[in-house]
Amino acid sequence: MLRYVLKRLLVAIPTLFVIITISFFLMHIAPGGPFNMEKGIPPEIKANIERVFHLDEPVLSQYLRYLNNLIHGDLGPSYVILNFSVAELFAKSLPVSLWIGSLAMLFSLVAGCAMGVVAALRHNGLIDYIVVTLATAGSTIPTFVTAPLIQLVFGLTFHWIWIGGWHEGALAALIGPVITLALPQLATVARLMRGAMIEALHTNHIRTAKAMGLSDYSIVIRHAMRGALLPIASYAGPAAAGLLTGSIIVESIFQIPGIGRSFIDGALNRDYTMVMGTVIIIAVFTIVFNLVSDILYAVIDPRVRYD
Image (cartoon, rainbow, N blue to C red):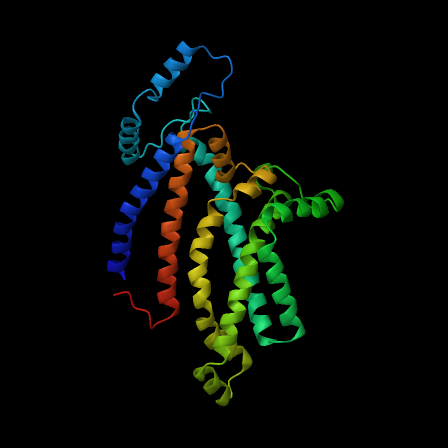
């Protein structure tokens, strides 16, 4: 297993290099720049600012300089929020996204697995149809629709939650964005668990366990659940990477100061270093969680051996 992990980490290095290279040149090829939004700025002052940030150099020179700084752990300064580096801004926004994403992922896995198991045990029954209907609706309705509805119903009508702001992570401020983030993942997890559990309950070893007189709890939890969790483990890796690095739409609607909102602000203001830093963080999380998902797959299924 250790050999497999080291091999995957080594493969991740050229993958990150390609992602960084493509993102960097795409950002710089697009017309405009971080200081073009300033109105009435004299050309000589603009030239001085670009010289300070080395934006007057050829794109290739800027790229090599950025790689050199990145190797030394420097994500560069923000071009829009002056006197702050990208690392300092991420130190404030990333924990917010990680906290919201972790809660959303935990809720979607627990609730989705429970719904999927109940639906499988009541296959072709009323509960099964209700779960399938809710899962289909949850996976098809976009977050920019569910978020305002949650704000309208639970925030403005019943006053149970705050409709915007971070408020130092207060519970009333967390409920809205966490539920909005979790709903699509919960729906997908419920559908995956339902299908996998139905298939697991019809395998030979489960029929043998039933013939031996084992309790329903033992059959479902100790035997069928292990095989049914395999597709969940495969799905959870990429899903966790997306949730833990924040959602652009959800953080914008709920005014959450997370990394997703930082990405939007950076893209609109042509803050090259902020956008590049966000892309790198998302890429790293995706690679790491895909690796964790593969490892969990081997832990759950003893037949899988990466050696």
